[in-house]
Image (tube, rainbow, N blue to C red):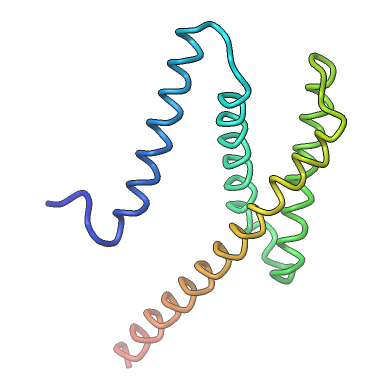
Length: 141
């Protein structure tokens, strides 16, 4: 049995790279006892990725809306989480004057690319499942 094959090699590489990067960065932070801006950005992008995936994974709750409205609602929810988090962080540390704008732009670009990719893949999967169901129905007749 092969665990890594043609269909999953890219996800395996991505998961491995992420795990190694986060582990190495965490090790550096613990070993040095302080976090530099580059390390902070690595953890920040991990959190933004988790937020983006979490928001997109909830699409089934919004199926009564059009796909465009669904993407908009999910985006606004994610931006609200980011802004609330930045506002809370500003109580403990200084946030750059452009911090809200920078975070919004950084997240927005990647979110919309990811959302388009996600919904294209979702549509293709739904079509594939519908074809399978149609074949099953035809075989029962």
